[in-house]
Length: 286
Image (tube, rainbow, N blue to C red; front, side, top):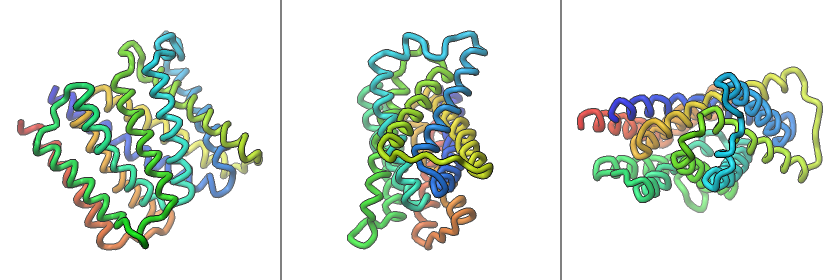
């Protein structure tokens, strides 16, 4: 189990790097074309990719197990997570949206401990809380420090937390490729729903197509790594490594979008990384 947790933690870090890059491409693409159009492209791209992987393994892309009650719940949470977080990325700074998303462990770990009988422990629980306090240090919520648009990221965070828990409880017969087909199909449906509301589609430029392709490729890589992490290690062990996403987001925000985090933001990010590393070392020591 220790080696599985180590590999799961590394997969989670790789997933967070992929998702942070996806956010950067998505934010740029959404500035040039409707967000719904970007989500439809990425969703269909992902469905084709994971369908190909499933067929290569000689398994159907959408088997009967994908229509189970657990998968229906997973899809509902996926809709909420994908839709609201995509809006948050498009309308708010990437670093802020990613920071709010780091509250996911506070939802996932206690519920996982209740549903799956996993032990959190005093040290691990304290480190998770410390990591969340570091997120608050970055956000500094208050009358002047909290934007109503940040509620979009909060809603997305709750959706992703439910999605991750449902992924853990998904039928073992479903492969990672089949879970990917289901997840990206939901993303495409979210995009179609947004287009029905906005009623606006434009013909993308070559640069726009490149942006959507970049978002799709990094989204696929992050999604595959996340599924691998959640199914390999214990939820209480691998979930805190979501905190690394804020570090990747800060780098992308600074380099690509010219965001300049202040000292408190950098201190909070350093605490988040430290908590994740201490969690890994503590687990290996035990």
